[in-house]
Each structure stands twice: as C-alpha cells, then as structure tokens.
Amino acid sequence: MDLAINGSTTGDRTLEEDLAIAAEAGYVAVELRMPKVDAFLEKKSFADLRALLDKHSLRVFTINST
Image 1 (cartoon, one colour):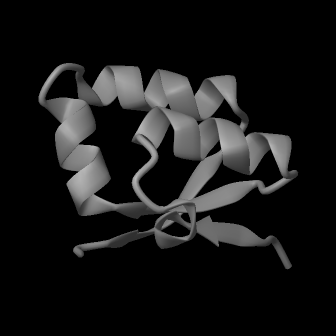
Image 2: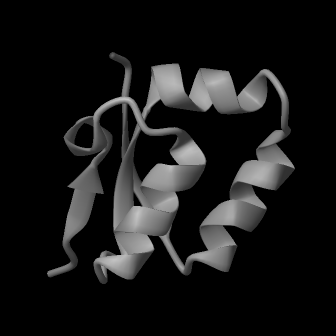
C-alpha cells in the first residue's frame, strides 16, 4: 500500500510547495486539488506539471475538484 498526501493538509501553499513537502515527507503519491492545479496552469503547462511530479518521484493518486 502506498500513502498519498491530500493537498488540503498544506493549506494555502502552492502546488510546487505541496509536491516538495510530499516528497520530503516520503510520500509516493499525491491528491491534487484543482484550485492549486488551476493556479499552476495559469503560468505553466501540463508538461511542466509532469516534470515537477517526476522531479519529486511522485504520482497522482486522485484529483479533488475543490
């Protein structure tokens, strides 16, 4: 069983911060929150998101719409 971190546990941190925190804590998966994804994609691309996930060796477990 793999553990995933829920994006709501990091409060108002950015998606970039969430992924760094998750990796540092030893998680292998993340639950992305759409408001954070939307904010990220306002300035960057899906390819950038994929690269960030790869950089931290994380996979997406689920996406939360709120």
